[in-house]
Amino acid sequence: MSENDSPLAITSAHQLRAALGRRFPEIRPYGEDDWDWTWADEGMDYLDAGDYAMAELKFQQVVVSQPDHCDGYEGLALLYQRIGSRREALILIDEAVRIARLHVNRGWMDPEVLEEIAAERESILGMPTEPERGLRPASDDPEP
Image 1 (cartoon, rainbow, N blue to C red):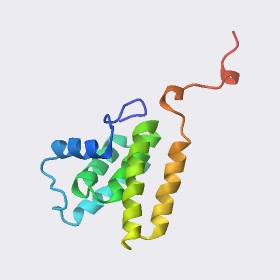
Image 2 (image 1 turned 120 degrees about the vertical axis):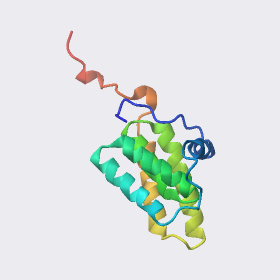
Image 3 (image 1 turned 180 degrees about the vertical axis):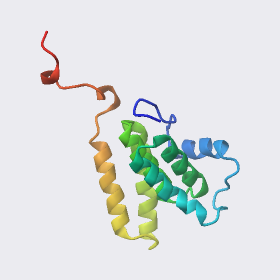
Image 4 (image 1 turned 90 degrees about the vertical axis):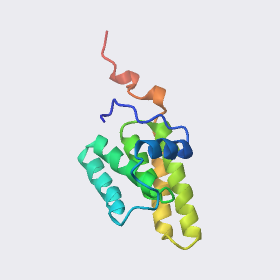
């Protein structure tokens, strides 16, 4: 996946989970061992290395194996942010925030994690909307 590729057409977190469940029928939600948590770490490593296709795969696997955990949604949101897909990134980061807030309220997650995800959401909100992507300010336009 390059910056010019489009991610899955994501309309909601529910729709994403259903589509990914069909894509990865061998992964049963909550049925994986601890190795499924390495997918989130691997996804971040691939994202940092610029290997967006592998990052996307790993984060998608996390969403399927742990649908009630924020890591997969957050990772996909950060990926889509990097490639300029604001709408998809916002849908996914909103799901990550929702899940993180629930976990903080239950005492399962440190509130600082929620604060970090909320800050990532603010960064995504600051992205240009899709029609603005790739446009340069008029001052950068070449002289006629």
